[in-house]
Length: 223
Image 1 (cartoon, one colour):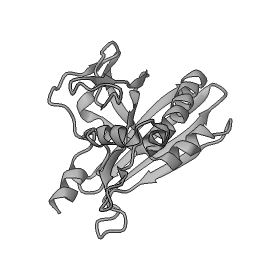
Image 2 (tube, rainbow, N blue to C red):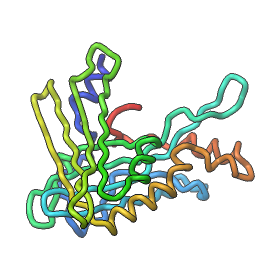
Image 3 (cartoon, rainbow, N blue to C red):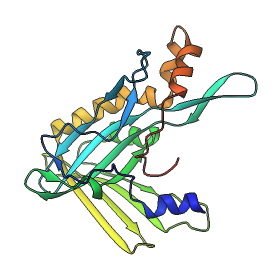
């Protein structure tokens, strides 16, 4: 119950600083360790952020973690995802980091966005308490809809019945920006599934390294 409350009452755990996120800031809330580096201090920050007038949209990958089975084999323990983070604007070229909301796209959801046909739309729904007695307390929906011939609207709606809040973030994404997103999603798909390890020369060693990668605290909820 304590674990559920922690995820329900928090939007998406934020850093301790309260400064607004600037358009020219290099701040990033998600990182994963480079598999080719043996140094524990080597961390890679790789967010792709789209800044618009009313909100900003930041995109970053979350790698899966691996665990040993009783037979000694390694399998995916926590699935990877692509994390979308929405920040509301609080001024010209300034965004409030503390009030961000997150939406983690699974491999299948990425497939829908990668294969999105021109002028078509798609929508995803998340409920952290699905199939439990607390289902429906927090509901998130992400819709991607056409913006005339110039791109798409990415809209995140978060309804929290416990806090009695209803938040909505809308970011217009141009065709060029969408192409960057789709290409990045296609590239990262095998990585968040853990399949890239199958072609590794020493899979046992590399999987062990990836199993040490900390799960980002910025996932929308514990998957």
